[in-house]
Image 1 (tube, rainbow, N blue to C red):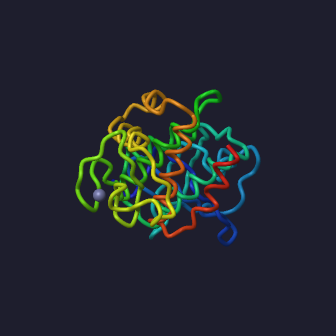
Image 2 (spheres, protein in one colour; image 1 turned 90 degrees about the horizontal axis):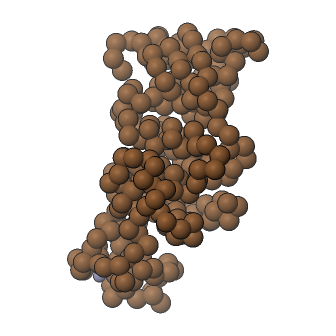
Image 3 (cartoon, protein in one colour; image 1 turned 90 degrees about the vertical axis):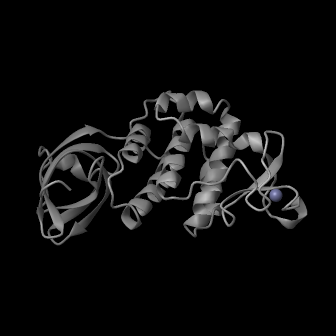
Length: 247
Ligand SMILES: [Zn+2]
């Protein structure tokens, strides 16, 4: 946080009642996560009225008071159009959990990925953007998996090789090291994971749509990434499967 002020764009991650006011957790591009308090309820015409909207992108000004930031102005840039989209809420929940727990440092790339996901226009494919967001999240968390070689025997893996993505081993495990009957996970051709590597190496959000060519392939990869993420966050992936079925 440069100085004791923050002025700029932010995403509302969380808003909850506190005394007679509210506390709002914002994710910012250059200052990481900051928490802001508001005293009293803003009226319907107030510029503060929209600032508690979950996942809206806001223009805010805040100054610090102890460990908190007091919000002095807020202007809504855009609210999400997703309505009840389960994938959106699921990713957001994962995201805010990571922000709250692990991410205090500035991270402009992750902010950009999240912002792009929130501001998706209707008609833009959701799955590739979701892949991009999750891949960025995993990278920032330091959990980037080994996708080029088997993490047990070290053998290089090619598109037609069969492997499982093992969070416990930190990446792919080849079919020789984990015979299919010994694992609950289904072996997949290594080519399934190519978009993950490609997405991680691109900064242009538009490229993500091109990289993950088919909806089926995107859905499969998203499932693998969610499993990987879930395991590392010690969550049960079953609920995420349910989310994917609703897409
Ligand atoms: Zn192996």
